[in-house]
Amino acid sequence: MSVPMARHQHVRPILLVEDDPDLRDAVRLVLEDAGYDVVCAGEGREALTRVRESPFSLVLLDLMLPVMDGFEFRVQQMQDPDIASIPVIVFSCGGDLQEKVAPLRVAACLRKPVDVDALLELIGVLAKARDPSRGRGPRHRPNRGGAARRRSSGPA
Image (tube, rainbow, N blue to C red; front, side, top):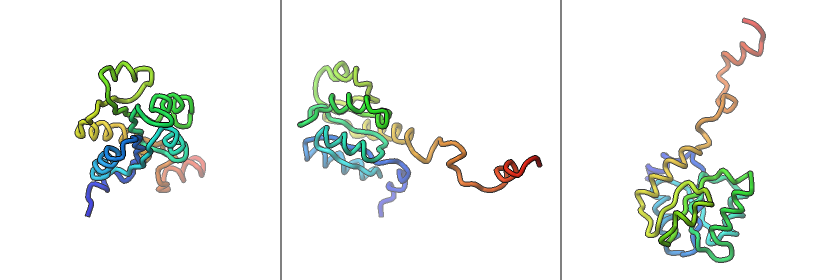
């Protein structure tokens, strides 16, 4: 029985964009063990297609990818109003990583090898903030009758 799965049942899936299959599988397993649904893409163009097809709570993005790199993915994501607000966590190699990603306006930046605890903490905060069952107005709450009925039938 997988108890953690219930913890994140209302959170949209996470898009994991990583070209190294071993690292991609390892991160996917960690996230799934933590109760998240994960969709994977091996390069930027595939990731862009996936993120345009279905809603994600966030994107975990490697920068060095074949076909379309993570920089170009993020630029195109920011230009598309339908997907621009999906937060991105970059995880990549390199000494000046923060400086490289500054123009990309990402939610967070982690250096490889990734600190799993830090990654899970970031995901928890960002995914909860985008939880589709939280923070919606009354139009998304079940109608319990009462006040709504009284308002629609005129003065009480």
